[in-house]
Length: 214
Image 1 (cartoon, one colour):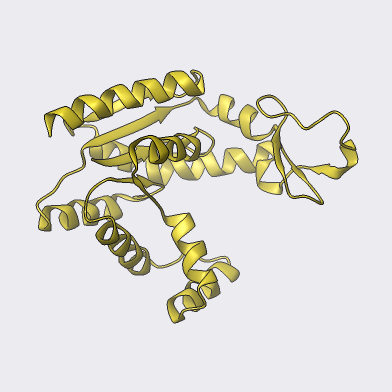
Image 2 (cartoon, rainbow, N blue to C red; image 1 turned 90 degrees about the horizontal axis):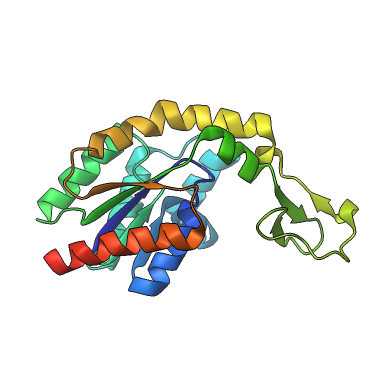
């Protein structure tokens, strides 16, 4: 089972990926997590990646490819979920070539569809505890009533203006990647505005049907 999960920031990819990893024992391949791990390792590659990030630059595609290749290899070329990669058509083309070279294909491609204004509303309600660094959501995971409101802060990138900029980048750069996969026989669109349980059930049903076909 090889899963690719799509969706704009705030669509719930991370939450759904975490649930799928636990339920189906999949390797969670997130380029964001991989970069944080390689930086924390203190390796030469980690130092190079950190220098790009510290200067506000994108980590080169070649490095991301190497890290993704290694993660897929460690997963035995099977039972993994890609979350946040590919982000460009060029990366999607590379991924297809890489998988073709190993005579495998993506089993399931899931796209979570959520309107921009719903995402702005979702993300703008996130809060961070200044001391404990605990994350809360005013609607889905509200902070305990005894917490001093002055200790709750909003991340700069969770403000409405910043969210809309992130969505604009997504639509310009990553949306074409989704279009790259729409003709794939196992491509599935799911309404990401439904409850967490409903989305999980829809993804699970699709995954089970494909698992039986493999």
